[in-house]
Image (cartoon, rainbow, N blue to C red; front, side, top):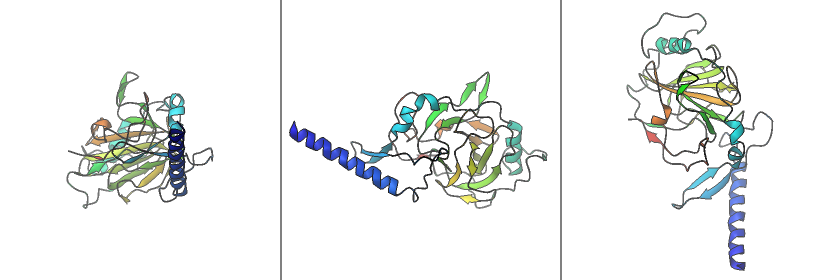
Length: 260
């Protein structure tokens, strides 16, 4: 029993040391303090059966019930999003709209069809609302709740075709074009870290999580579109992720899923 206690103490000490190293490396990982000005979340490093290291945030599990209440609070302007897409040559053409502003055509450097990997837009969080029918209408994305100020990442390389607050209901929103038809959208941000026309790599911090626009609390409303049509992001995102589900504990990380 004494040997067992010593082994347990050694494990706890090792995990604590890894957590301190993670905290010391916050700037390199571009993690941010939340809106309340508190220190960044402590993250424990745990080794799985294959020896890979993944991170689990007890904070999100403890706050799960609250985070599940953070989602969209009303309608988003579908017409405004389509205006942006059409002006970039995505989907059907459309007449200009004064409130959206000019959106340039996507760079010729973008592939005809994106064939790389995609990642989740947050490192961790709670999926508070799924893609599909909601409130008698279609919810065209995932709502992922987390702490205000958490970094929001580009799911794949591409060009920023919109970064602003002119799309009704979306608050501060970023739209990235990945190829001739595929785009991703990230809404309700506290602050935008990119500008229209920027070229971004997968994993670039494009915004800080917030609750702007029609929102009940800090979350990202996240969409993937093929042309005009929104698709279920879970069909393209990695099946096992660092994002916690609303029903249980976070699943373990895995390699990004490739877009077919």
